[in-house]
Length: 170
Image 1 (cartoon, one colour):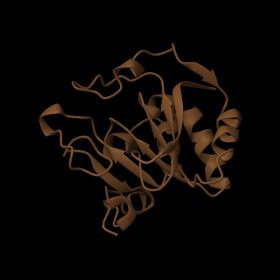
Image 2 (image 1 turned 120 degrees about the horizontal axis):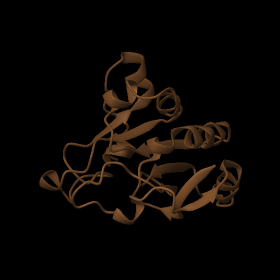
Image 3 (image 1 turned 180 degrees about the vertical axis):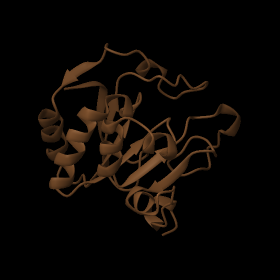
Image 4 (image 1 turned 120 degrees about the vertical axis):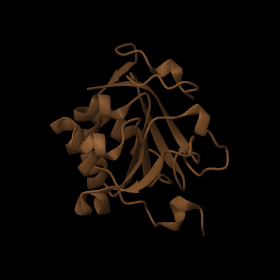
């Protein structure tokens, strides 16, 4: 069961193409200048099972990508891992934002490592107001990275994506 702040269909700001963004409720980071401070408190969102979320996503035939945002999806890693597994079975690209770095998640809980292994793209690191930039694609601050998760896991270190669609180079 997931505790969600909301679901947005037809998003074009949380990754390339038409995506669905699933917002987790609850975040331990409390970044100064956060875009979604209403998602910080734990346990006050809408409870929703992973199958229901999948059906909502699948109801949009134009959507081929899903982004987990927040809040902090990795604070509900087991539930988001279950959803990510179902999404991958249906051919969706799965991306996630996290205030944790890739390195922190590698050293994280078993559920966090499981979720990490099920996503394609990770936008990692906390939002830093002093690093804020409106010129960045799919990121809020310069310290955040857009990582190719399968390549990062294979290398055992963070590997930036080279996909032009994520870098807006096409």
